[in-house]
Image (cartoon, rainbow, N blue to C red):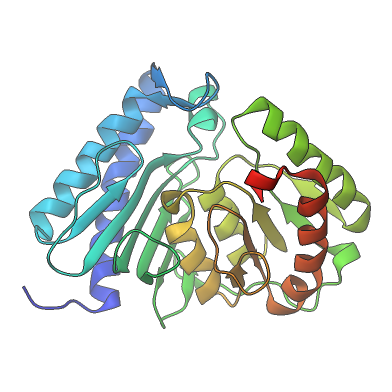
Length: 277
């Protein structure tokens, strides 16, 4: 099998995301059933999550049988091609359950294994079936919302910056995260909690947020959105010079990132337990 270009991978990922998004949208219209809880009673998976991931996995296997796969709702498999697909079939499942139109199919293709510290992201798609927003990026090719090329907001001072964030499914951890927000809210324009990490990252790319940060993201939560934000000019990383991982993901224009990261690091150090930093 020949090595595809990032744009070729993006074309395939986009086709699959659109088909998967149509399935998710249809299931939302039919009515959503919770299939199980995962890490906590609030952390749910729906039958639509599982069905959508199964569709994505089948379509990838048909087109790229030698590639690896790492999704939220099924077992990971390694491949022989050196490429891995990182998939969240419905990011924002609680929004999906409640009919809030902020959920998305997130599909990324990376060179390497499913480890954000070592992978090289090649293509990413985040598709919101409820709004029709289609965010795409191929490595080195820029980020787009539909046909519109995206660029992050730059030159925004901290006190005028609109932040986005998210919270853990674990109640005790949410309380500590709320303390971080309490320490931050007086320093910035305001804070939004939309409920989908993939869309939050894309909203930074589109200038709908100035900065997004969150603790506790899994690879499938940010793989596609991080590439889209980076291709729109964002710096995406974690504490200090670390890459974006479970410990922390921040995305913003480089100037705002450099201002906000030390403040976030101080607040997380003060309020989060040692095993949560």
